Length: 350
Image 1 (cartoon, one colour):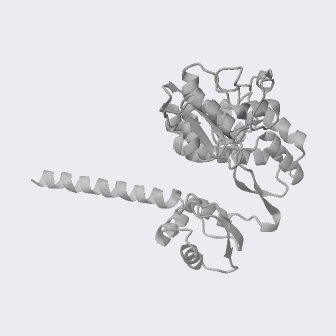
Image 2: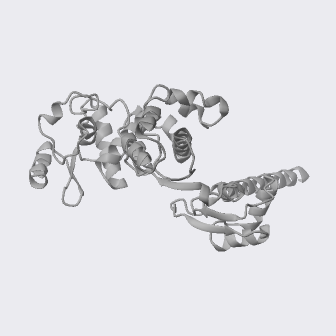
């Protein structure tokens, strides 16, 4: 009887410990609102106490639990926060907030840049040159050949060795994650690129095991293939649900050894966007012409957002086999048969 009681008490203790560990991880590493990227000014005044700072963080909705915040800064030996204006977001974890408040980066020494979903490396290069981050040719040289990243490995700047290995001898197109970044005004283009690559790795971290283990459309797909498909979806359709449907259509075509016939890849090959391409357009000789070449193009055609990546990973297979985007409002029109698709083309694209 004593043994049984002891065993039950041990089991309860183990469950309690696991529950505390789980709650700790949630509070420390999960943001209050993962969808809120709005930047909010948070002031730490000179001489302000840690308790007052924590109170303000709780009042403004940046943290869940004041006690755990205090325990965390004690365990991590963060005894001082920098008196300054800090920029926080609701999608920052408690650990990221502590790091930000401890960083001695005066606002007048940094700048904010925003990379738009669907931009390719040329778009980013133009943006960087316009905003005097670096000249266009330097950025394109760095992103078209990833060999220079190998030299950074020993310094521990690139956090994910697998990502670094995968990008060897490849363009960085597709992996420069679209987001808003804060950078030093004198940051080098290499530093900005590394920041974007590490952000990419962070954003897809919840899906890594799924990518490595899951079978998409009956065949195991690599991360590089997922991102290539995501880049096409980013350019083809707007909403997450439509992206999932188009993902299903495209993966199905690949499994049936049919050409993707993606206008987005054709636009990339021609460097020209059209609502309808001519018979001459689809004859262009390019590895990115998926009317002439089966399977995925050799590399991503832009830098996709997280919705497109999730849609590539989670295709929705349906009765649809064709689609087009209505020029008047961008709405995606799906068709089951080629006959329906041709009718829709005459109806909406003429």
